Image 1 (tube, rainbow, N blue to C red):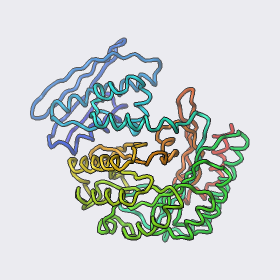
Image 2 (cartoon, one colour; image 1 turned 120 degrees about the horizontal axis):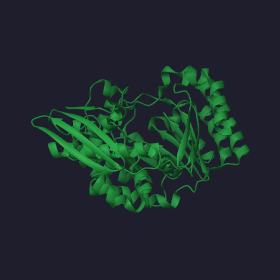
Image 3 (cartoon, rainbow, N blue to C red; image 1 turned 120 degrees about the vertical axis):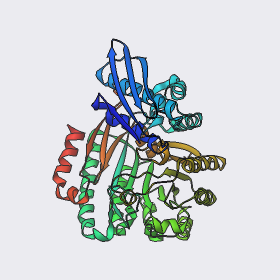
Length: 463
């Protein structure tokens, strides 16, 4: 355990993300105290380490900034570099992403321009294989990047057949909240109509529509039909519905989705091991995944999600899932690394995910085998509590990637978001800044305060 303290508490939370990444990789117990000072264009950092030995580390950086926001960003960057160098020197442990803790490494890589590779390797200490992956994704994304004028539409349907044990999202088991579904859909349809007025008034160009969850296909088919009929109006070139759970999909559902112009769906096995599916609360079998996919594969571009480091799974178990997904041959396969946030049943139960060595081998195997099979990595994101401090990557066959996934991760597209827990984003290309407007998180609160939801949307988009 590392006991980290700092004389500058306003940065402690951000810096602890880096320190926490070492907790599961070293069994050394030690204390680390940080102090720093800035004089002119020089930043001096000192770290006092107290463990098996006592040692003081000192670092100096040149810091040149234009405004207070840039100053804070540079200070945090250099503090992370100093902390990382100190802990690596004492423990001998290195992290695959070095001192980077951000969610979007591809966005940072692009912003750094010609300096990116050198800074990632030599300043941030990112491993060469991860730099190669980031660089490849940035290049693959280029043909579909937003020119600054396009907008995306996001609609959230927060109901699921059951709650998976790793889930911490705002999603409600449908059998416990049936009475909320109809009033929720009524409000959602009104919000969609309001957003249509915004699009007309401001003459916005819509790139994509993405209906996420939860599991949108878990609600009654006639209600989902109404939602999709309303969304057809936006005429996106990409229309995605997260079907996700194969136990919510049948031919009637697929036919209805197709009738509204839906072009992409997900059918997510998470694993192709039935024992694991039962353990994580998924009420379907691997055979059902194959059956549903067989129905859908000629109707839609299909994504399949897999999760590395699920409870009880060995490296061979995960390899089986990757191999099976490749055999089925969907257009997209997304490989997530298990992360456990507060509120998930696994986190509450004290589950510890696979050891770091196994986690890295799982992710590396997926990357290698998918690229051999003709899939290209096209988007990436990282999360605070991910196993082994690794990443989530979407892989796609050439020219089949999901544009919405690129837009949301690279944060270069304004998003008109609707439904409980939805967050609208207004992106300023000139300033590279994002304004946000968040709806109420819980479905009941969204319904009860719907007038406020619409008023906030009106102020956000029209004033």
